[in-house]
Image (cartoon, rainbow, N blue to C red; front, side, top):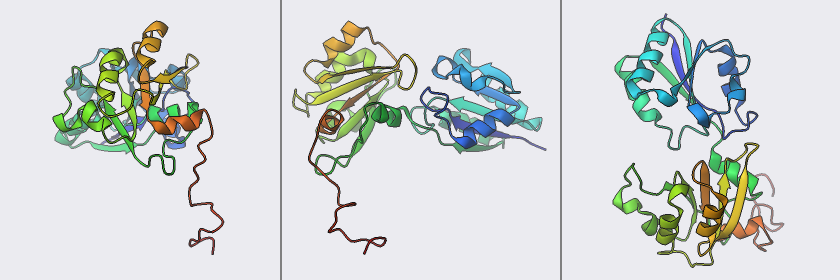
Length: 252
C-alpha cells in the first residue's frame, strides 16, 4: 500500500508552538525531512523516524526520497519552518508528488508573523487605524512582480510584515518612504520565539542604523505601520464587538 507525505508547519522556533496534529505526525512518521537550521531540532528528539536535513539537498533529491518512501508504504513528514503558506516552496515539491501519483496533505503551522505579533504583545489590526495586513518581501535573488514592488505596496498605508529582507534593510526603508511618513513605527524581530529572540524598535527614519549596529543580517521579520503604536501605548480605539450598544446573534 502506498504511503503518504505530510507537509507540516513546525512553527517559528519554540518547540511548543507546533500543532497537536503536527506533533502527532512527527511522533508516528517513518521518515522526516526537516528544513535545516530553520527548525528547532528539539522537535526531533525521541522520534522513531529516519531523519534527513534538507539544507544540502536539491529539489529532485528531496522528491526522490519522499516518493521512494511513500511507495514503500511509509509515512513521510516534510517539516517546514513557521507555516507552510508563506515562502515555504512546498508548491514545487507538491508538483513532484503529483507527477508520481503520491498522496499528500498540508498541515498548518504557526507563522513567524503571528509569533512576532505575540512577541510585540499586540494585534496587527487596530480599529480605525488599519484593517489590512500585507505579507511581502523585498526583491532579491527571487524576483517580485512589478505590481508588488515594496514602494507601491507602501502607498496603501496598511501594516506590512516583510519577510526575508533584513539583510537589505537600507533598501527596504528607502522603498517604504515612498508611502509611509518617516516617523512611522517599525519593529524588527529576530529569531522570534527562540531563546535568542531580539526585538528592535524604531521608525522608518532610524531603524536601519539600529539593525546594522545590532548585527542583524538574517532570520528576522520587519513589521511596519501605525498599528505598531498599540504595542507600546494606548490607542483609544475599540472594536464594536464588545461595545455595549452593539447587537449581534449571540448578544441581543
